[in-house]
Length: 352
Ligand code: SF4
Image (cartoon, rainbow, N blue to C red):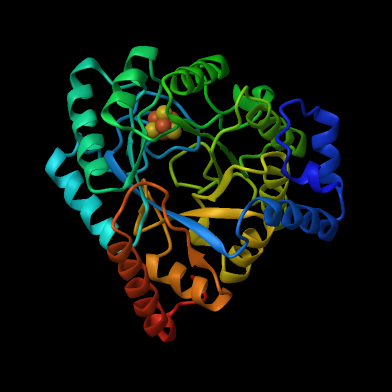
C-alpha cells in the first residue's frame, strides 16, 4: 500500500475485494489495519461516549436480537420517555467522569410528533453543557432530521445491522431501504452519521463483508461505525445462536478500519464478554471509540473504571472532544478519572 492509499477514502469497494481482506492471514490483516490506523489517527487515543437509554422497551419492531422488542418475553421492564431534567442530570454526571459524547437512545420504530419537543430539548440541554450530542430514535423523516439538526444534534445512530442478503432473517418490520433512507435524511440534514452492525448472529463471512461494503460505499462514509458483538438475551430468537469465534470479531474491526480509514470504529455491545486481551487486540485492529458507563442500552457494559484502568495499562488516552469546551475542566475530569481507575486497578475483575 502506498502512503496515499493509506489515507484515501474509497466508496467503490467490490465484494471480492472485501472478502479477500477477510481471507488474509490474521497477522497480515492486523498489520495492515494498524498501518492504516496510524496514518489517520493517534493510535494511542480512544474516543469515549456515554449511552443512556431515554425510553426503554415495548418497541413494535421485531429485530431478533433485541430484548427491547415487545414480541419477545425477556423480562425487560418497559419504561416511558425519561423526563428532560433527568436526562440532563445524567449528562452532567457523564461529563464529570470525562465523557466527550452523550448518546441518547429510545426504543421506537420512529419518533412521533408529540415526542419531538422533548427530544429536541434534551439535545439543546446536553449541547449547552459543551458535550457532543448523539441520538438513536429509529427511523427519521427528512423533517424530523432537520428539527434535530436545528436543535444542535451532532450525530445520529442508525445501524444497518447486517448485509442486505441476511437482513430478512433478522428483521421483517422495516426494510434495508428504509434504513438507507433514514441515513440519507440524516446526512442531508447536516448531522454526522453513526452506523454499523452486529456480528455473531449466525451470518456468514460474506454477510460481514456485505455489511461493511454497504457502509463504506455510502456516498459519504459514516463518521462513526459501531461494530457490535451479539449479546445473546434469553427470550429472544437469538438466544441459542452459536458463539462467534473472537478472532472473527477482531477481523471485522480490522476490515472496517481498512475500508473506512477516517471513521471512528466503535467497540460497542458485547464488550462485557470480552476480556482485556480481546479489548487490547480490538484497539490494535483499529477500534478507537467505546461506550463507557454502566449500561449500553439494556445490556451490561464493563464499568467505566475498568476501561480507564486498561487504558492506563496500555498507555491509551481518552480522546479530547473537538467542540468548544473548557479545556481545564475537561482535562481535570479525565485526569481525575484515570487516577481513580489506576487506584482501583487492584480491584479489577479480569474474569468479567
Ligand atoms: S433494535 Fe431498535 S428497532 Fe429493533 S426492536 Fe430493538 S429497539 Fe426496536
